[in-house]
Length: 395
Ligand SMILES: NC(=O)c1ccc[n+]([C@@H]2O[C@H](COP(=O)([O-])OP(=O)(O)OC[C@H]3O[C@@H](n4cnc5c(N)ncnc54)[C@H](OP(=O)(O)O)[C@@H]3O)[C@@H](O)[C@H]2O)c1
Image (cartoon, rainbow, N blue to C red):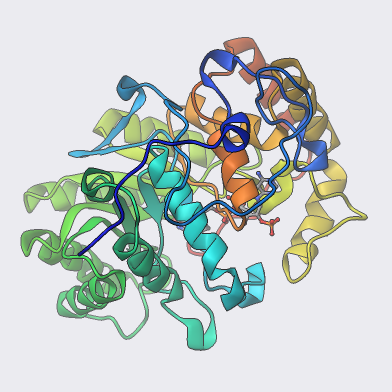
């Protein structure tokens, strides 16, 4: 494939919008949703005069040191990835195909700045757009304008749905091959089971596990992981895969300052003891931890129903996030994502705009202090409502 030559040229305006290492910039609390950009000499957020070029996305480096990269099994990934549930989802996330060019800018910007982990799923995309998230990633990888080394570093983590008609390991292998076709790649980085069927169809569970073994043995995936597995079920699948000679590398679960109950902490402890990497999904609480929504300013669509229940009790946590963000000259979103990194997890915030991607990249390259972490967690404890857990989450 022919690709435009890579360029390290970075526009000063874009350079200004990233979090720099060592907290070297300025910024503001993220309550306005777009402030908090880390600039060397001004508190003003940068103005984006024109969209970032697909050919030459800026490279502002380094956002993190090489030793801050994270191992997931044998794979090496950035301390944060990006989630792509919204890419193709009209119902919950208001996706429109006109967004594709901006989504491609997000992808290019992320890869050019060392973020190489992208989470997707074969069920992402609503109605006729089913599979759209994987298809878009396939196109974006193919058209990526940077170097081959950058492209080769990309790790796609996709998830296979435990649909009731996927009853044999062969059907999971078939599902994996369909994902490979949509993604236009020869090997998936992490093949993950999207959820366990242990709660409602325990007999199907073994087909899922054998499916992972088969795709790993056939070399269709470089590593395998699970999603929405609780601690007990995780120990079981870990033991089974181990007996088949397959290492379990990751466990993806809802993990954020809004979702840090006993179950999540137990899962994290089990992951640590077994050498499994915890990937935090919904690290921004579906957007609530960006600080831009209030009980009287709700997002369109079904999220409003959930937010209406949770936001009124969230004042202690959002105030604490703002306080820490202001002190550190970061944004509320950056602090919420950084908390996930400080807990030893790999967050995968969802992003819909270049502006959000730029801001979330500013969660890298610095660390909350232990006191700030305690302050945030105590405020989270004081916020009565937690996120509703995924219906497929097992114990
Ligand atoms: N395994 C599973 O079952 C599962 C379940 C859920 C998610 N996931 C994965 O985890 C990823 C992330 O989770 P998520 O997308 O559910 O939720 P999230 O990361 O908590 O929130 C993402 C949303 O917050 C808003 N946002 C992001 N950055 C922002 C910023 N800097 N400022 C203001 N708003 C910002 C955007 O929506 P708006 O602009 O519309 O507010 C964005 O779509 C998903 O994309 C998916 O890959 C996996």
